[in-house]
Length: 435
Ligand code: SF4
Image (cartoon, rainbow, N blue to C red; front, top):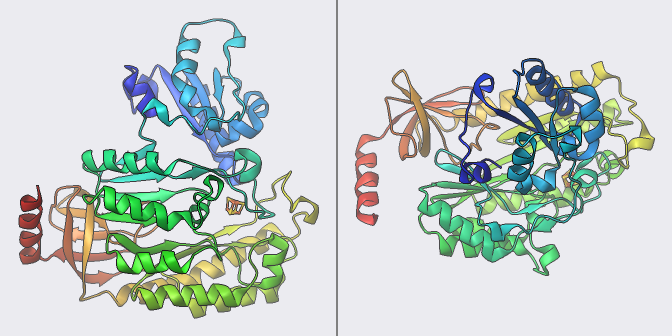
């Protein structure tokens, strides 16, 4: 949306009070996200000055548009999640004035195939870019509202994605982060078998200047041998994988309608670690799912202790009307859910600290994202932006550089270190030669 508006002559204004048009990209996935979206919209609506326009975009609008307008009376326009490419039309329509009928509620018509408009559909932040390879999901997870909001999975054409990666390379992007609701399902609807490795191979060949490719949101049971072999053989494919497992007790997983063969999950995790020693594994779990007993939760705790994940997130179950789990109700009390979330996170915190301590004395390439007060902040291959840790580096290094950092300190989530000057000199010289 930002790219389209900028191309049409609009100017980005980070201060809400000075902007003519306020656009909130809402999330409707779970209750806390909905509350945050409504809260943000209300705050902006209350502070609106005459003539200022407020538009609610995204998932919450898609699923509950009428309700959003009812709860936030100051909203001027709505735009659904798969109609983001109509944002210019919506803004222009609203600015031209007109009755309340000028409000837009654009439903989820087929719209993913908008690539001919030539917009790079990547969100670029500094030297990193998220690249969405598909939208929607065809998995049956009982707790999840995403298929209700977004519909089934629609993959973006391979050649379009390869071209976008080339564009990102030209823009100077160093890291491309592939995202979708389920990246391992890429290409299924295009008739590709095991399409993700095929896509990655094409991207690696097309954009040699992209240093890091990172994969998020793999589905258990869909991480193929071919994908693992490719990751192990290509240094530019980071040895990092985010595979949300949601739970470790087969009975809970069956109630969730998720892959429940924990032996197979263990084998996949072992295979990844064997193929890529030092592999960073991230996962997320859902606690307090309807009917979750203390014994089932204990099994999850034991699994986390045994698997020693590098990164781990824990969510509490959010009751979502319309999902397959609705008939199960919301049986675990809120305080029990929260207590389980806290216990799991505390267990993981110690594991995370120990994992981090193992890196002290080693040298890691770090992508620098900014500096402040003689310190630079960056990320190693183990850190996806915003969700994982950071590496705090002594001294000021230009943002966008990948530098070798000798790790000298470890905290629960973050590392500290100093740049290996000699190695950096060699890296910079090699880069200059390449240029
Ligand atoms: S794979 Fe993820 S997005 Fe798809 S239904 Fe399951 S939880 Fe939802």
